[in-house]
Length: 489
Image (cartoon, rainbow, N blue to C red; front, side, top):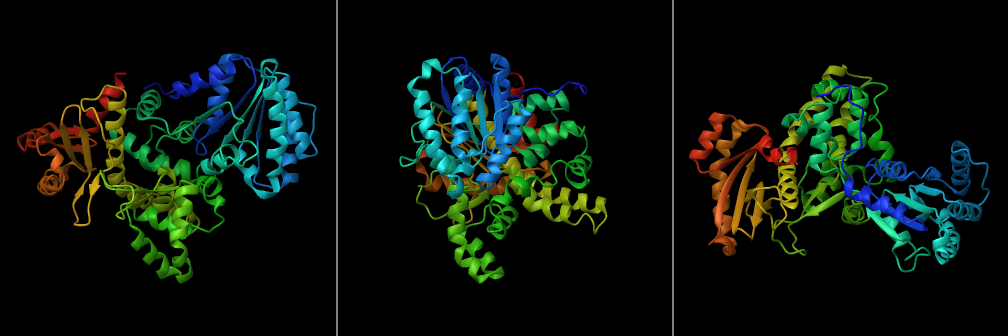
């Protein structure tokens, strides 16, 4: 561990190379860059600009406001970047973007999805006229426009819908997802340690959002114990993440979906019937709207996902709902209530309460993390199990639950796993695992002739427990073993 090591740029090498290549074309470009808030979109752009020596740049974050508010914000950014020009209309903004691009500027418009709002939508037509002229003389234009958005569906409506003014105008599109686990392993090795319990704790909280790990680094708690980290990031008056969920997620909804999101966060894996019943108990009118709310949150905002059992058909009715984002789920399920009570209860008591709730959620997080590790090592060709089917667990209406199902057609192997945050519970879970696998194989006869394997997954597994698992014909897979191939890349 190198405590004083400066924060670096982690992962994203393919995306960085792609964006660097766009900038090095030395001709007009119009790039769509999508990804959830705080995922590192602006950092990626800065890194690419620095590596290509593009010093003429303008960044504007579009506010969720009316035209007057947007123009005021644009003028503030123009002043900040040392530009003398000012805009007084949406048409003037579009024309300024074109002039600056012609001069070689790279202009980045963040939160571009707000132009999908009715008061701002005319800007898209005004921008289209300028973009068409720039495209017509692309070889003479040395700059370009990058539009960033955190709501994928609204960005898609602006740029990919056939009736949208800007349809088919972009030259390139990139989507940023969470940092992969090998990148997280790299930054933790440099700034803290690769302790599997720490990785699970932070991944359950932040998943692969680089900004949150950097916040922990800047507060000097990325390598601290759990309570110290929670206190610094969430419970002190200057905590950087104290208002993060409300400011960057929930404000989009203006209170419309709070009950539903909180229920799913606190009951991950709930089905449609239980959601409707729970919401109806609180508000009969809201309960009637639950189906529509689920559709909006799933399709428009992509904040929840409906998972089906592995091998199930897309139209299967046995779906289960989960919050897509680890940070939002952790906030709603474990942190929101203790943080809101900070002025009324002892801080240490509230931190302990939040930590207990987070620890309970880490059991399910371990299942997801293990599945991601199987996928990532297989994708990179460094795993011992080449996957052919994505890992999402298995369940059916008869109550059969299997934490992990991994299918490898190339080696004719199928592996079933049990995941326990507490390794002492692994042995006790084996009889149920094997009984459930017997039911699974009875209904999926395709795998009758395949090699069936069992594995047990926990953050750590002692040598003595490994021996007992081996005697039961079960593969021991502590996170230390699953992470090892990534650490050596």
